[in-house]
Length: 594
Image (cartoon, rainbow, N blue to C red; front, top):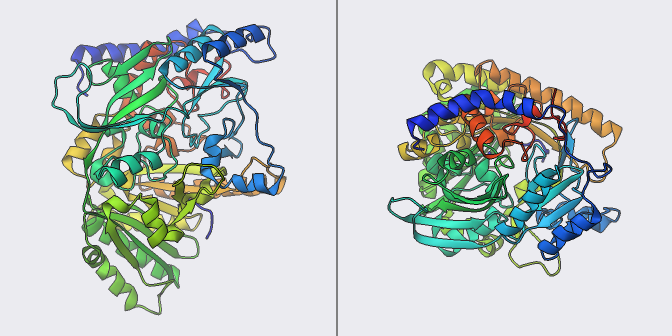
């Protein structure tokens, strides 16, 4: 298989004040910080060994000197295919870089935090000494936000507590309690799904990849396979514990610091402080989860155009609803791959939705060839993240962490294996508006999809657009910082490519190939933008070089986010690439732009 990748209620006076502050904040910050820079290890202002020693004592020894593994042996290289191994290494991230953009580089020191007090000590130290500060939870940032050379790292790996609530009421609120789960910022979705779904029989909206960090996904907005049913992961946030730039530990929710709480719901991770705990709403578990997989190849361009048009019509009429999510890809060579998931349907109910397309392909054998019959499978919803069940029934779907001495039951989806330690050649996304599913729009959409596939594999992620979702999911997702385009998009189009890890070096020939792939990726996305002009992008899966990233990622919410940043982090202690406030800083986050 090829490696091409296919996700508040506010007082009126607060809004007016926030708008004014948002308009003023960037210029005020630039004026305040003219000539200001962060300190590097070789500079005289870098903390002394005695000062680092004092911090280490305060932290009970949990200040680490960061060293990279050598990867000199075949065994070390093999470990780079294991996301749990990477998670356990303080100096590594789940992506190893992006061509001509960033390369994963370790911090000088890391605080392996055990609680919010440790985080507070690290934040105050970094602020006092003008250090570059970064935060790593799951380490999955495609834009490199969880690493920076010459920095101090706050590592939330050990914040792993999970607590289920039958009736959770956020502090300071008077609303009725709801079922929820509180999750430490070091948790990954593998652990949360095991606790909430496999053991407790409920559902929490999280990510599709089991090794993605909970805190980063929620702060980025967050999608999973069933977001068309339950909305954004950020929309399920009820309360968070966060250490802000002043070192204060805050409990934030719709009543306490509501502007900061809103910013945490899609305003981007690593920007507002260090989140140490989140509480998320849980839902009744559907009866079933299931999958549909089919690989087709058209034998001519005209046949491929017709196949795409038939699928677009099928999606518009029978699949754009809360039951269906995940993706379909149009690939070079006139290949069409369907990898969709469903909830709340039996196997026969799911297959009946596809029968018209199955019959169309079967009656045109001269035009289409299927790699195998369409696979349709359904299973009890409580078993989707049950590693033992999956091992016994679909062992090829998962990969196991087989390192000696690791906790039992650590697994990941085999389909995510190529992304582990990946070096990204390009990654672009765009919201596709539901207007393209109207009778007048379908032909343009199918033709643009075909044109894009001439350049590169182009995938529509249907669960990463909320058109067709229930009204309550859309309403909850509207109350986030995400670009409102997501509410009216039927899918997020993604065009991307990853190559072998950069941890062992990248040759000149590999760099040349990566740059060529990047050009093709952009050409493919340009075909889609012709029919979706002004389409925004999903921050967590966006182009590293995206020129209009503020408008693309947040749309009309950008000014309000500026105001929140000015209030809680006026000195920009927390800066990540394409994060709110980063426009004032050099690409490495060390120098204020003139």
